[in-house]
Amino acid sequence: MMEDALVYVWASYAATVLVFAALAWRAYFRLRRWSPRAIPERSETAEIAAPLSRLSGPEA
Amino acid sequence: MLAAFANPHRFLRLAEALSSGTGALAAALLAAGLFWGLALSPADAVQGEAVRILYVHVPAAWWALAIFAFMGAASFVSLVWRHALADVAARAAAPIGAAYAGLCLFTGALWGAPTWGTFWVWDARLTSMLVLFLTYLGYLALWAAVEEEAKAARLAAILCLAGLINLPIVKFSVDWWSTLHQPASLLRAGGSAIHPAMLWPLLVSALGYGAAFTALLLVGMRAEILRRRALAAEARAHAGWGR
Image 1 (tube, rainbow over the protein chains, first blue to last red):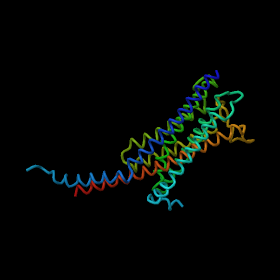
Image 2 (cartoon, each protein chain N blue to C red):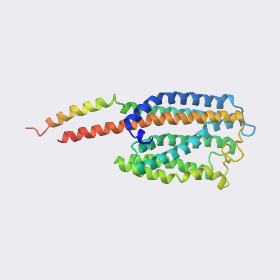
Image 3 (spheres, chains in turn orange, blue):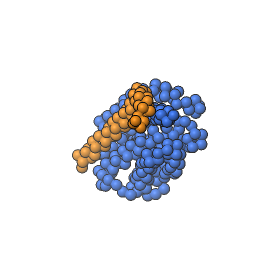
């Protein structure tokens, strides 16, 4: 019975560590994805794409 | 006070300054609480080693309730005063609260198996906690399902305010109905029923969960504000193409 309980104890602590690791991982990657350092790349793409889209009208 | 932090730029600077400190504090408190509960605190005379599960289960339950109350307050502010950061705060808090509620149910089941002889019973405390977890999932699903963000924020705030009715049911379920789950041991008339050797690791662990929530909330709110800014910039760029 004692060994059985220890298995449940270890499973609980492992689950807790995994949940906090997953939350921290998610928070870090969401912040990195939308951080100002990533945004200029997106804006730059948009600025490049804008004139291209104007150029790509119906072909003569 | 509220107006001072309504400025997302000012909030971003404050949140950036606080994130690392609260994150480090959370890691230290969680490590201390888990180690104390797992290795240093004594086994219980009745529950044996299974009592150690309570150092991770009980703080998860407390904070799952507290986070939903926080989301309710933020939703109220969002609906009534249209505070710029209120729905950002509620949305950023929801995944953390859902994870805590899920962890509470999972560790509760693992505690129930050696102590009660079953992982689950449909008693009032367990069922109302499951309802809270499902409300969290519903709140997140609503945000994901409605494309127009202003509408999603309004609907999610209404769902959150309606879900608040469940909080007193979870808290007082053990007093109102005859449940297998034991009544309150800490916040009860006559003071705490927990021995200090078990109370201290429980409190340290609970502080760790709270600090982790604060750190994750600050980072989540920063990411959400930056996401909205990026999407607004993209929308402006698209509008420019049309000209």
